[in-house]
Image (cartoon, rainbow, N blue to C red; front, side, top):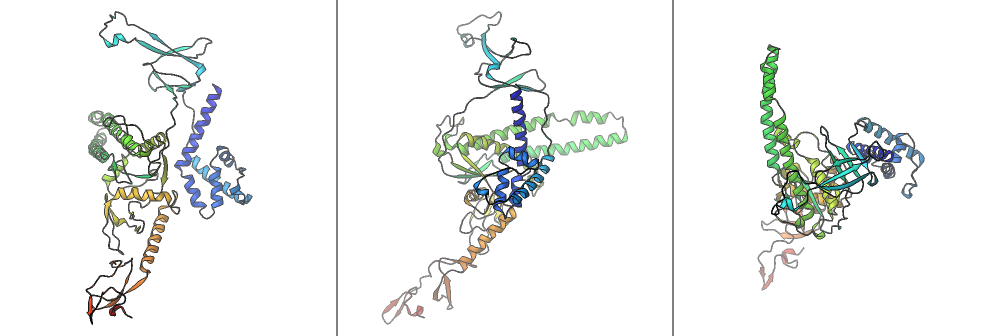
Length: 508
């Protein structure tokens, strides 16, 4: 029991440190601080891989890390990295309270510290009827006997129903109740590795997500969030007036009986709590359905389709997702801000983590900056906020005449898929740097198109001699790859094509 308590304490501290590192974005800070020194950056990342090294850093000591990659890193440079990590970790851990042991509500028991047995009980004054299904089955009751304070005196706890209880278990007492739940660990069969095509998803508010194929999953999410936010907004306005009324009554008369009556009958929280629970339950159900459709495809086990056998070729072997934990600030409108405040982003990410693990799918988080404002065509890549209007993507390129239109979420998912192989844009790249990189790429593409090979075109239709750019485009529109064919010119019985380089018009 003592070893188990120590293990639980260490596990609690490990989870606390992992959560602090994730919330405070320590890895992103390291990436920005050591952007120009890859070896120090690699050493800083390595120091965070083991908790023993993190403990040495918090105590001011330099961990002894002997790797071939870090052979050229001197002692002074390592000490500089350790001092920087010490400051970052000290600030990060000081913002969050250390985990504390509260009143004991759970107890872990090994297989030798408990026993299970079942009994067959028949209620009093019960007459068996052979035609009754309940009488044909025995009335079984299952019990768990756990160790107690006295020797050879175990405590028997009755269970609801009959199930398989084996291995190490944990008893968890419920708050405000005399009941307890038994947590049993079952072995899960290792899933077969997915071999399907690479895919990417873009999380949304009007729908749960959109994949790179253009399929939308959970399309009723927007209706649920909007209905809940509007009802909450209307209720909040009425409650605000009621609060103002009670305050004004208490200012006039501190012993007013109307003010507490209004507060008691109109300012409760039970209806709001029930409404919130219903909305959250609907969102959780919809999120689970959408996640299963993305991961399992046709092998999704739903009530409508029934049990369809799983096929590894239908599950994507690699799935690109965006990180929603960095979203901060307000939306453009108050209505959208209210909808986003009810958006359960963590629920979507949690479901995705669970089902990617079950389905044998590798999930990778990529940088999602400007993915819905960038042209998905790799030869263009023009970035502008004018390209997106709501859920519609309309390419507005001032250099080439293109009127490409599509769904903004589909465009974002396509760009997220391309970010998997992008070496310049990583997860920790700032959005300002992403914009600079995208603009530089577009500028180089524009220069390569304008500086293309020039072919003499001869006399144009309006009598002006000019040149065209073969297989390229100018700033005034797309130029055809071949000059226009004009009517043949007849001279002295010889027929010349206007596009022929040996014709008299093309002779220089």
